Length: 471
Image (cartoon, rainbow, N blue to C red; front, side, top):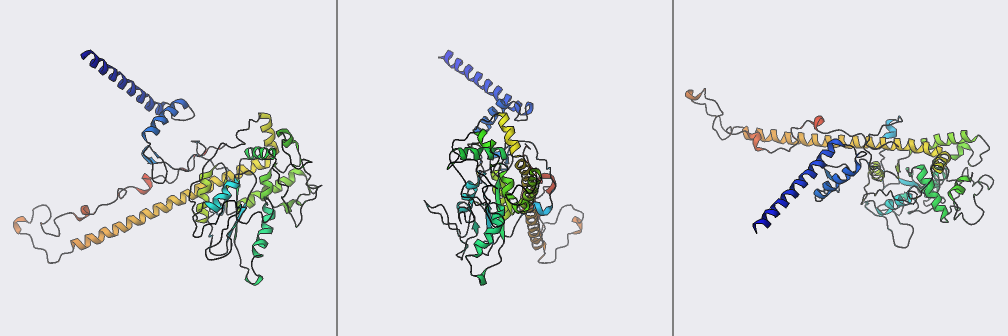
């Protein structure tokens, strides 16, 4: 019996020693391999132990607790730990995009939906996921929802899921800016037509992923033949905009066939749909060289993108949600979800084909780099403003508590009768007189918050800039 118990004790000791060695190794990993790009297996093992130990350590808002601090939910959506370095200079007006959107007035949000950018998901967020005094009415089996203003029989949202394709299937900037005002005013009597503010918004996506996603969509039989492509009051002729296929659709086309069609509107689609096509003669490509035409379209697209009230990026769902909420002073009910497993991501594309896609979409690549820089700078500015506002609120609360403390001190120290003169024998004695009013330190009786004595600038970092990796 004694041999069994002693053997069990030895086994327990061995297990304890091994466990301590393992934990020590995990701790040392954090010092030896501080970056997740190195020693990835050890970091995964360490994070497994951390997750297991902190299962119950979640904040009420869903943010994780990491190293005793609340983890920022907007940091490193792409898993990168490298600071974002701006490449373009923007004005303060470009970066501060808060608008005075009045949903009870006559303001209208117009969603420019570019194909295969995640616009369908974002469009559903607009009609189903915003906290509103009068939520949109969405019914099963119906493609459109009714989004009316509080107290009015009028919509505040012009989008696929609210008004339908009223200006044509996937109408672009050129079509929407000329069509939306007339569509909205047609529902009002001429003498009662209000002066509206139209706030245009859109979603952009990485050009290669978007192009591959559109190819897969077309390969399954999808077409956008119902698109009007109206510019300067008319649709393009067949000679101006030839078709890439002769049948009802282009189902089953290979990636090579999709890339080889010179008239494929998938090429640089985002640049074309955000630009003012009337600047280049619409779809008449004979007015100027191809490079000159696309250079003008790119500058127009950049200008229109800067002027938009809001735009988001498919690759940054949480930041897209944050900027929309800050811009329009609206809140979503459920947080956006970052989904990386799309049909486009599952396509195994050879390097030669990827290079060809980049060449075909070089204007979109330049536009996306510009948009990504602007997007992240806007996010950075918005977060800095949020931190400054939080600091101002804390300072205001500190002044309020200090004022209450001073008031209490004045009331408690105010004598109700003339204080007694101490005896001459005790005149030189140290310490306060033992009266009701002066016996204790009043300040010690008033509890203060933990942050009372903290240095405002020294203990909290204003902003971590951003920690996205520039691709």
